[in-house]
Length: 347
Image (cartoon, rainbow, N blue to C red; front, side):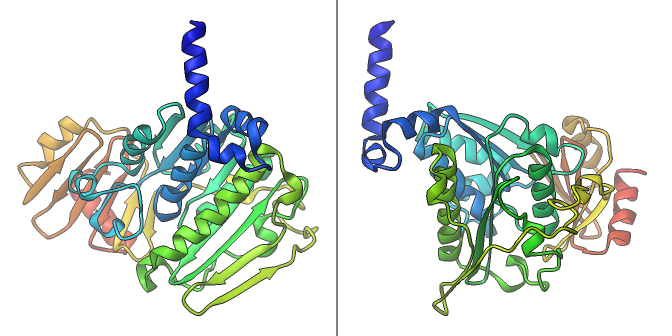
């Protein structure tokens, strides 16, 4: 037994030797990393870079949450996925876990293939030391922000679109929150699905996030960046916004109302730029039962253990997830999506 422990210790010293030579981490910092846990919400472009860094650095537990599956349009910038993942329509969390297990088997990997919402956010974040933002919309970012400030968990924000990116670190009780910097969820209508994105800005923003995460996890608070970083890698611009004072009327860190946690969960949500409407609220699907039910009516149908994709006679596409969610693809009109949903799934 003692020989096994010594061998494992020797292997770990070899694996992390270059990281431990970096004085701000060292052996003590490496030990702290192994004892820490992070939650990455959103396993798209930012999330895959973040997960790669956290796992390779030896963070003890990496929890990943995402509601989506791998598509070919992801492969240009979402670094953990490949063509086979897209062909199989694997959930992003599952595809990421398969890759990351091969990178560092000593890290505990936890996954949640679900839509992150007010009803499950507190359970998702329970017990973690740090939350990393890999999302692509401000509605979910404000939910993370409010949940983290309610629970007292540091939150590292990041966002990228086009060639521009932003990042900041928010620590409850020490810094203002995201709402103090960006009061509104209106990002000007620009998303990766409407104006595109290049992969270098994704890697840069997520690497800034990962660096700040390592500082927080090893306890090097003095080295933390205190500004909100904004940069454009195509037009060679770099700007840092100095911290603002927490707003007394901020509904999160000022008034402690945490409005995103009290938001009514939407049953029909249009996914910006994707011509898709997500409809929630159904009981969990038995996918085999629903495969048999939809197959006679569908033009084509593909299924795996996690979801069903069916193209219906009118050109509509339905994606059923085991947790009861349905994507109606080919429209961004919730009313039209509900009509199609009612036709094939019921009320």
